[in-house]
Length: 295
Image (cartoon, rainbow, N blue to C red; front, side):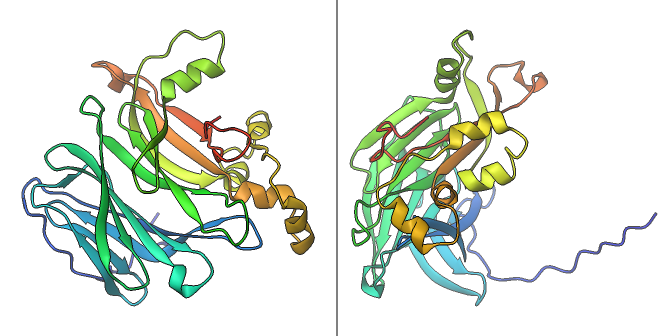
């Protein structure tokens, strides 16, 4: 029976530079996030932009709708990406306070995370680097965790989340000057199951971030036992939010509660024959009731 679905010819949005090494060089892309806060909890949404990391070249941000090159950040010729870059547009209300923050996990020649900051003046600078411990496995995922401001007029800030190939999760300050916490997927799973033996290390194959409300409506739709762990902690000003919005208080808080989803398999030579596991973690703001930022 012939299919009734046809795929149209693709449209070229932009011509990308070639990696410095045309044989082994990588080109890795991901969506750009927009994060802002106001009278309601923090909103984290995908923008109509993509961030592209090219080995030996750097990071380029493209507007998909126009299409056009928005900006680019150069990296050393020997730099190679270990995962797609992460770029976020922070909105703090006024136009002058808006800024772009971009992060890249690279090897140049040692593993590190590079941080670029671009303000309203359109100038961009490599403002900081974080040296990843040499014994750590490669970083396979970078994302940001918005911090809930203590006051609606406070400047919005973020933390940086890095997930390694072996399941290690590392959280850093926005400017990469300090590691806030680190943990291991296998350790979290073992701690949550008192009757389980220590779990073997895992090999991460896929990572994504969503929010608790979306997870309840999709991935955990029929798992009421797991949905209970997504209950939000009380937040200051929540009653005011409920009065000003037709959406329930809990739903608004769930929309701003990050949920990390990791798919992995046991590491080892025979691991390809073993089943995959899906790990779901709710990440709490370290300024709230759970200071460790994890659950």
